[in-house]
Image (cartoon, rainbow, N blue to C red; front, side, top):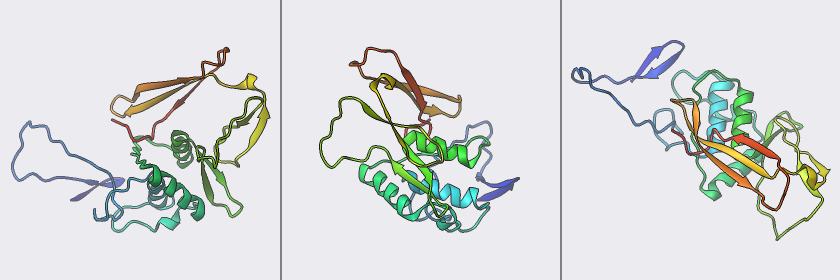
Length: 211
């Protein structure tokens, strides 16, 4: 049942008998496509992002049916391509919002976790572009390189650069533990063919693996 604990309604359980000092636990799987719990779980990361923005950023959902997903100002074609990108690879995610944040910060953290670029379209919508789209044929470029500039909300841009600016090692923190407010695992990838030390690190908070 729903119990309103300001500022939002909360799920509550009424036990048939006094449980005393017993520890009560619950298996929480996430939100479904329908607010009444039917329709299946929202697992596609693109669907999760659209659902969150439509109901909790551009609207203030309290109870009843979810708001129309079109309330989120996402470019329809770009969002559809992103949904297909996740579906064809069998990728799912879990998004936990445990502390106060801004919609822009959540969007940027989400896109950083999945290596997705987000940008404004000419119609004022947010578009998406996955960075690891498959190439139509085998392609290898020795040097110099094309280097992609990291951007938040902005256009996709590339600059011409020499291999002296390449990063030889990247560390990625993942498996986020909300209870301890820390990442439990770290993965490191290195190009051993580069003899210089240039390290970068990222935090993949919104990946599937989480505690």
